[in-house]
Image (tube, rainbow, N blue to C red; front, side):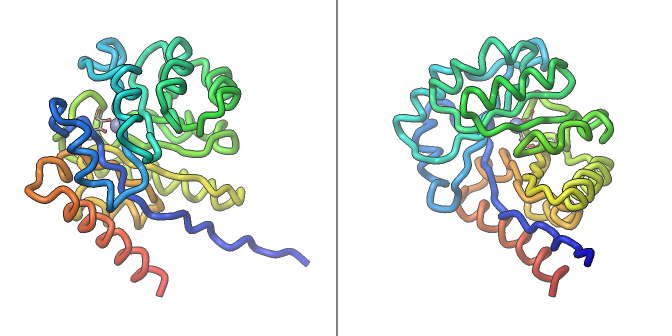
Length: 233
Ligand code: DX5
Ligand code: ZN
């Protein structure tokens, strides 16, 4: 008898982006949100893939000595193959590469060989079809909800449909995929993306630019949980 697989309900989590933290006191910034999270989002930019420069493996290694969190490392760089091993050695737990840089199959294999959790990201104007061939090979899909490069930009609602298509494809295949959104996420915009099927919410300015970053994490998670609970009850 044919059975229908129950939809996968992956864990809802907020992954604060340290891009918006005080880089002079990174360990303190991380400690301030640690009671409310298990993932930390680390934005790596190379000045080529995006017009900004941020951090490299030495900073990840320094943070590693202060934190046991899962380091969700978002590589906005044109040559991830050169840097995956240094980031792994520095303490990255998962790495996410952009599908726009190409060589995706080889990069996924390299991440697996290194023991990294595997993520694949797409810019707002990159279609679902670019991600589709890889959905059964990755642990996480990151749908950028701003063009990458800078914190503090406005959420792009036109990406929500792509999130829904990724979740529908994952559910149809029975894949327990994490779907992450990144850019302009706060306690208001999170509602739309959780409804579409996202479950990992990167938030930079909506956490670290608030007076109480830990409470801000709680507000985003509460809003996401309420939306999911309401939708399923
Ligand atoms: C943007 C980065 C994001 C950024 C999000 O290129 O990938 O992680 O820090 O910042 P907010 O939440 O301020 O949009
Ligand atoms: Zn990011």
